[in-house]
Length: 315
Image 1 (cartoon, rainbow, N blue to C red):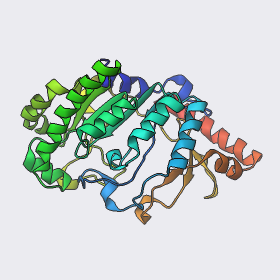
Image 2 (tube, rainbow, N blue to C red; image 1 turned 90 degrees about the horizontal axis):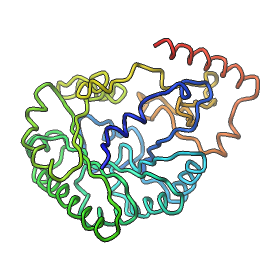
Image 3 (cartoon, rainbow, N blue to C red; image 1 turned 30 degrees about the vertical axis):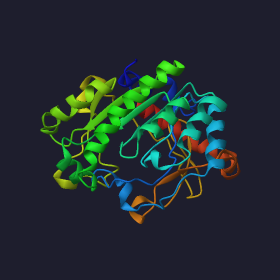
């Protein structure tokens, strides 16, 4: 089974073709099926009620997933900040992406609490290529401290990881399809890796790879929570660090202008985070075409984009 870290490294490497005013379509996209989550992790901004917590509609999901595949996206993550196992139609979403749209690779990350064996089986039968558990606690006490959930659920998650391996092998023997199983853990401080040693050793026989992640600050919203400090890049994988780059190449101008990320997505400004809303939202293709600024404004924006790209090359 290929290592998930190798795949991540290939995606996060910004080659020269992406350091352009008109970058190609991204190869990998995550789409959030729900903003709901059953955890209240101190390091995650999801529980801060910055937005309405609801599920994506099936018509919107099916349309945009098909459009992205037609545009050339190859990898689809059916998650973001929310917990996708809370969505009843998660297996249908995977099946649609794999069988109807033809995505070569569909992946999912979960906190594991709702990832029961039969739900995992349905996802793997639908064609899921990768399932990763976000396993960020050394024991039941730290689990409750980190997630705000009762400590008894810690063992439930460990069992779900073991069950996932058993289900994966059953599905592989029956269908020939093998879903990768992975786990990652956040290093809150310099002692966390040592503290987690026993917990990681228990789950290692049941996953294809485990790796550590740094603690990020969620755009400053969670920096300093519980006395922690966000880090610049993944110090746990020092060999895979990337040079700093301006990841957002933006249209500047009046508030109704669109913003275009450096990986090719159109983003429309919303109220800033400190006013209780995310900064940008993905704009459907038709709406984006109707709201794009005029030709003169677009050319002016491209000029600024070219300048920003030159600055990126200097980094």
